[in-house]
Length: 242
Image 1 (cartoon, one colour):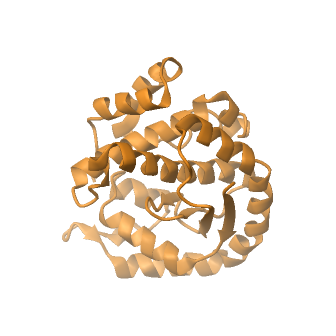
Image 2: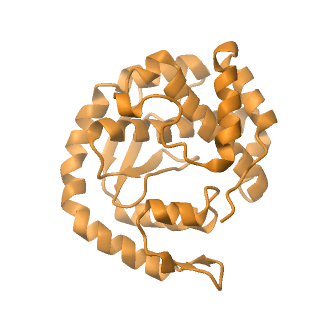
Image 3: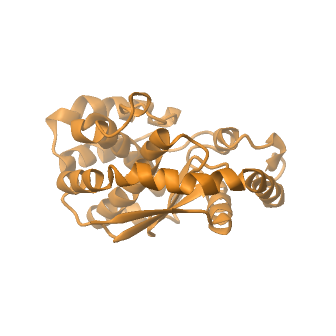
């Protein structure tokens, strides 16, 4: 049975955040807004993130929140351990695939809502939320790792990270299927508090709205394999504008 560890790792957090913002399918403006970051971090003339300004903002925020993050580590672990076995067992029974890692590391961030390292056992989740809310975010990023593993095995083209249009397409499929599993499966949805239930949780990507509705309609009529193939066939809006 996989286990989850919560920790602080600002170096990993900052690097992953910078990498994400270089090629973010959700849109740079949307991501920076979710981080409460200054608008001038995005250099309009160069059309890219000013990494020096983002690093300064991250380190300042991390220093201000470090004690809160530290205090939340045992709170999150206690909350997660209550659902750990149910979560991993249920997902395994749905996807019918062994988890790619035995242990997962959750790095708590002062600014980033969530990032999953699709070929690694580490994720990033916001470390300032209440434990009950944070559990759904952690579950989302962990599930995305699991589904990436499934996609790489069954849809080899999904591994084309160097080809943005292809990778964005499968990122969208993963986001929608992850939210459907966690919010529409009765056993998994029962693990969350009322404000975190359902398949609308944090799926605030306009380009995925249509696919989410299609998958919701199909969910109770399909196996997991059929649902994924349906999502892949119907995923057309792959990236936000900026």
